[in-house]
Length: 248
Length: 319
Image (cartoon, rainbow over all chains, first blue to last red; front, side, top):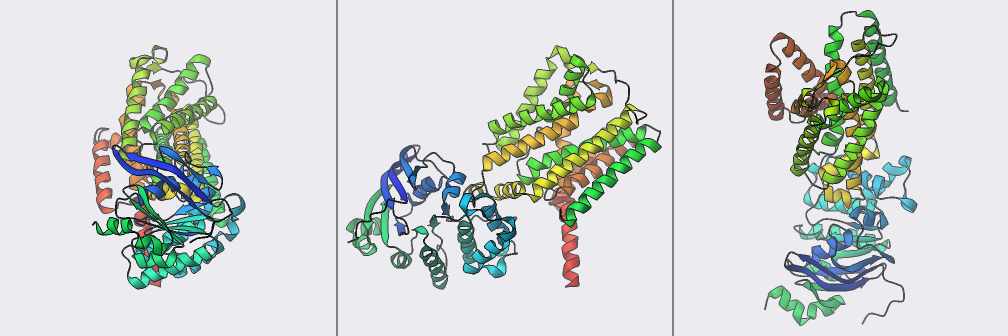
């Protein structure tokens, strides 16, 4: 059993519901994410995982319920405001700025998201970008156009760009889908490394090994509802989780 | 200021001095009359590409902004005999307000829907002006030019110089935007609006800002046109030809760099003038269409794209 945590939640999702027409994508979802936590989010296709993180990152707005980040209600804030407050994400299908180089992709984040205490003076931007790219293993690709990157490099570039926004919470949306097993390990090591620097991470993933290795807690969604939440082994052993995945 | 900027401002100064000297040394009016038209297109194309090129929002409402500029000048001239400078400044202000209104109303729409909305705006505004008796209604209005100011010898020469100043202003603004965080934000949202938003780019605010700046410049470019022709009527001031020509000029020049629309406007603008004089003003529309098709097929990134390709080949050959 997990010991109760004394500090307040970094992110509180409270009774969030999201409908698309008559389809209920998220049904009364409530969960607290703690500072520094490695949180795994699983569920079959169409279970509402991406919808949930869209509601967190601001790509969608929850109709009912609230999203509270570091004590502030951000339910109605546009996405760029949330990014500036410290929520960054990658996309299931990589969305690079295609007309730019890898370094320029990160520059956008420094220009727009690194505000306040995170502000980086123009003279230091190149260094900041290069240090992030070095950490993500992309330093040699800095001045190449993103169109020349491989799948795994694109995923890393997205994580690097997210890092450049100086996030407190990083949401990785299936950053490992379609990668070979050695590439999965590369990206996973990268995420664990980032978590080691104190960044809270929500990881959406289908690759169970990765989820088990990464997560301190796992939540399973099915048809927009939470069906299990707890330690990874507990959730995997859960009858309803197995049914949801195997369809029996 | 870096070396690039110094070069740019020296170039701008040389251009203005050359223009000023030309007004003092050439006495025939026709070259000024013809060149004014080209310069006007340079301002319009550069202004268009701030929203259409950097942000990728194709505006078909150039003629609306242009016409509003023309009629702001007409109105102020008729009401209070406002001097040219006031007409232009007021037109820029009206253009900025119109850009703000259009931007807030339509830039939430993406892609083709924005373009359609700008066409609708043109028709709405043109219809309103057509029914506005005070500025002449559908029949148009004749204007008597005030006496020309020293050191110019004719009014057209003065307008030519004023429009040249606006070219420098428009290019300086476009160049600043391209090299600043605004340009990077616009480029990001052009590539991917959702990703831009999630990287901290306030997409709506940047688009509206681009629309305001672009609108102000287009209106300002239109303001002297009434005095240039000494006449204004809605169907020529709001002529869809402006929208189509300006779009073609920007695309043919290339929208990735501020110099693209300048090249495009000079190339197409002078070709149009030449054809209008030598053959007929109808043929120039045909040539415009053919050139647009040729460029879309053979050089989709315009003249700028061609230059870059040649340079890259050159660099590759050396290495």
